[in-house]
Amino acid sequence: MTLSVAGSRLVDSAGTPVRLRGVGLGGWLNMENFITGYPANESAMREAVREVLGEDRAEMFFDRLLTSFFGADDAALLAGLGVNCVRIPINYRHLESDDRPFEIVEHGFRHLDRVIGLLAEHGIHSVIDLHALPGAQNQHWHSDNPTHVAAFWQHRHFQDRAVHLWEVVADRYRNNPWVAGYNPINEPGDQSGRVVGPFYDRLVKAVRAVDPRHVLFLDGNTYSTDFSIFREVYENTVFVCHDYALAGFAHGGPYPGHTRGEWVDRTQLELAFERRTAFQRETGTPIWVGEFGPVYTGDPEIDRQRYRILSDQLEIFDSYEAGWSLWTYKDVGLQGLVSAGEPYMSRFGDFIAKKGRLGADRWGSTMEEAASDLAPLHRLMETEFPSWNPYPWGARYQTDDLIRHILIAQALLPEYAELLRGCSDEELTALADSFALARCVRRQPLLDLLAENLRGEGSRAGDPVGDA
Image (cartoon, rainbow, N blue to C red; front, side, top):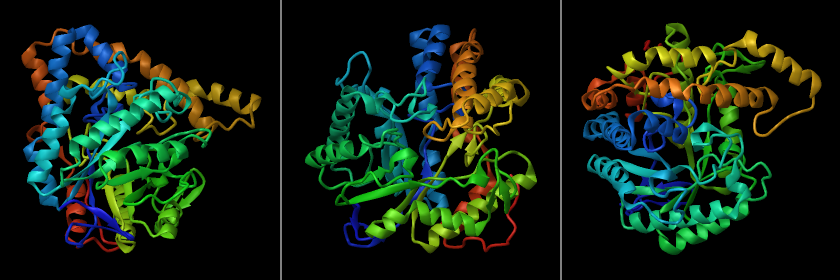
């Protein structure tokens, strides 16, 4: 059953083409602020919670959360939709600690092993995705980065640790046919563009020495959009693009319609997809969209348009025989197929609303929160530094990242942790169990849309799609 690359397709051991289509398990072994409701970055949040609960009770709470977040019923739900692949993001801190580099934490594999096994029981492949690397491989919260500096590319020490970690992971799963392959670096952000290519050369050689059979899923630079950094087409490799639609962002406009001065319709979606997959089509390698998916708002009309964006993207992917992994499976209501229930949402609902009012989370922000407070700062930057265009997304995003998504977000950490103060062990368990599927709310129109597509019954352009 081990998959491999044959030309522009993935095939199984019998040579039968396999198109991997599924979801990302975001917010689990790599927690993210908009997915589980905390502010800032994961390691800072965990430290704030430990200060309130103590080491042992914090560990109990987080372990229970990981257990509840994905279980056998989750795997069964995905299998029932027709999913054949789950991309599993991981924070390196589960497998290695900064104070003891190069020492593998064997205990850290227990949840990963458990979920890979559950998925295999339901005929679903796993792609192991290192989403947060030592030193942070990109500039944002999802690499557990408390700053805006991707230090991974600046220090050989961090790179050596990542290579060693992947040698261990590849050795552990080299004989597991239900692991489709390894996604070693999620969304690299090498500002210079000079380090990432040679590092991939080194990493590929190291992993292949341990496990020559499993597929490598390699993201392009600048958040999986720039493939010019690849100096060769490695064997048995998928070059992974990410394809978020501009109109599907929280600040997206009507669809079809204008978003921040750009007209977006189905034609534009396809043109964007073609740009992002030019390298794959030119090299004759498989196309796999490692992340994509709109943000939902709760407004029925806007969400109908977001479902239409998703439906159009899936039709485009189908026409190019592209595989895909929708972001994300489970969260607190922004993108997930299902979202957490009670008592978590009651305890943290007002806090999550405050984060939204302040625009503290980068993902899900309309860029207009606290606009009157920040407008003078934006005007100052535009007036005094008109040519400033920082990597990766320019001045407006950089200013918001530094002020709202780092400064304000970090100031919110104690408030989040304090909401756990005084909780009994039973209450902490109930909060964690709010993420168990039995307590979750299902986004049924999204589930139906995916099931129809995966059964080969994708809705036709113009057909109505229901509300959330």
